[in-house]
Length: 193
Image (cartoon, rainbow, N blue to C red; front, side, top):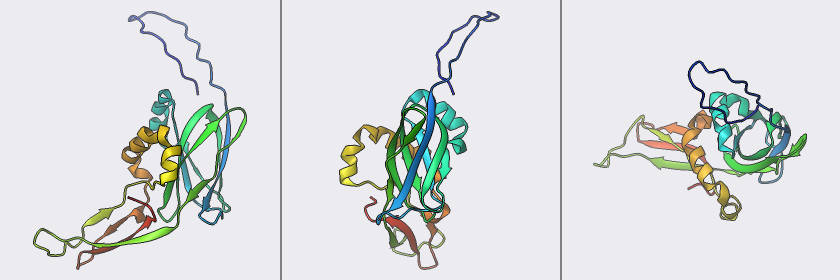
């Protein structure tokens, strides 16, 4: 990949443009649970903090996602050098943001720790207090820890954007349908808001 700014060009004007490919490298990382064990089959998405790279991300979102192996390791074979927001999503619906820097041919991201799952139980009722059957209840927030809020403060606008632009990254088990009594149960994170 390469990023450059050229033009504007007049209609029928000929121009020779040379686009230099950006230097980059491989990004390795690991997704772990709260006990430090690797989380297998988790999806990890990277989003560049360089806004000029957002268009390639939106054009080919699957290329910006890797899957962890049986011990929680993931790899992106080539990413342009720069800073990235990472979002790990386990097979059971837990997710956690992180950050990574690609610098040189080989880079290792800090481990992404996915929290223990809690169950959210609830009931949907209408204004008269009657149960609402077959209503969809969706959990769309990313978990945040107070300690990480400060560490990720520079990423806050991007985290908010990720909440809105990555709903397809949430798996099926992050929503539930209510039963006849209006009750539902779905997995959540211990500190989700």
